[in-house]
Image (cartoon, rainbow, N blue to C red; front, side, top):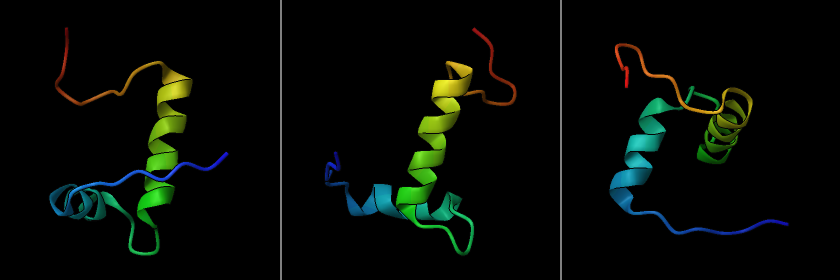
Length: 49
């Protein structure tokens, strides 16, 4: 099932800045979700709870 979400122009620009040159925002978000599902959390360098 495919769902459509609306994002602001600012968020679109931020997401595009993290994408590889040949990568779409959709592909980038899919990769983020996959990482989250695999790891259980997003890891950020220098971050600790």
